[in-house]
Amino acid sequence: MTFGVREFELTLMHRMRDLNAARVEDALEDLGATRAELRAAHAHWTKLAHSARAPKGLAALRMALGPPAHQGVKPVGSLNCQVARWRLPSWPELEFEALTGPEGELWNLWFVRPGRQAALTLPDLVPWQCVVADVGTSFPGSEHGEGLAPNHWVVDFAHEGVRYRARFVYGLFQRLDREP
Image 1 (cartoon, one colour):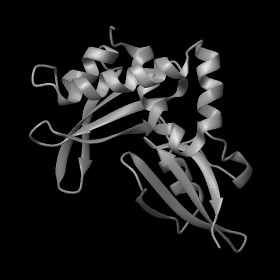
Image 2: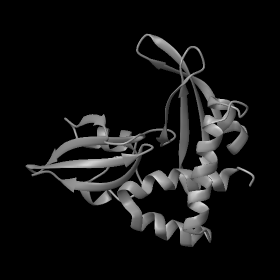
Image 3: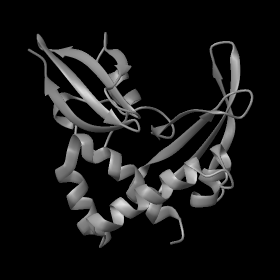
Image 4: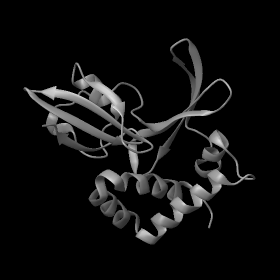
């Protein structure tokens, strides 16, 4: 099995099933892919990640996705980190970003919106259409936090007196839960 863009997208979707299985099923149908392909892509990526001979970090992403559409420097606190972004066919309005630390270690992998963030209202929170930064800037006073699994993220916010938790996988919005 070769590992390219399609397989990488399936690998991302494997984790997205945690929070939005129905949306992943729709995407599989759109791609003409099966659940078995989804599982195989995830297993292959996991095997590569643990192989002593396979490329790691940005090199692994370049192997799967080719050269990034954007490379640059991003300040994070007092550090200047390297950033690389790729466009993926299943999410054409967004880019998949890898942020690396001073020694080249991967610090973060998630979707971002190139340019400025979208200004959203509550009905605009549609799965797979917005990213963490969109929600964070659209709802003042929002609080960011880690989710319950690897590559999960949450943004808690209030709207018209009701508390919500927006849930993300790889920075891509998956679902909105009303908090008690």
